[in-house]
Length: 201
Image 1 (cartoon, one colour):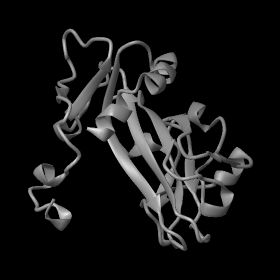
Image 2: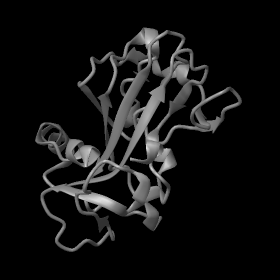
Image 3: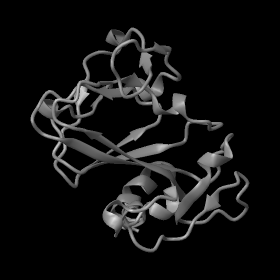
Image 4: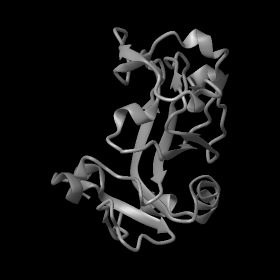
């Protein structure tokens, strides 16, 4: 329920509505946590290349759980790349969190570090090239990503539509087959994974 309440927080939805309009679906959340001295980078990538959607309509909100800066591997972006269409990529050979790596990124200019204080958000298009360096510091860097799109976004794999949240507005025809879920009760993940909670609580 804690994640659900963050996803539906009006302060976040007001920002998202400015970008994708009044009808808002949240279809995924994910914690990206880099522990101190984590050797893995997140290579330059576009989110849309990983997802089975007909069009690139997703906006990501990156909510800082910890302070994030260049020292502890804050996310970096290549401004303007969201207007370039799908960018050519290869499978990376380096230790990495994700397997795709955009080639010839130098042609897009200097990257910009997205420095955030805990509780602040960054918002980007699923076509924006972004990534992060290994965390060579003594500080953790954790963020929660929330994926939003308008309800007309067509999903090719039904598993991506399960448990979505209609956060604001309406979806009168549900032509894309979203499987909207109700607000969960409690914060225990055991029922989802069919496992015993850690510590037996």
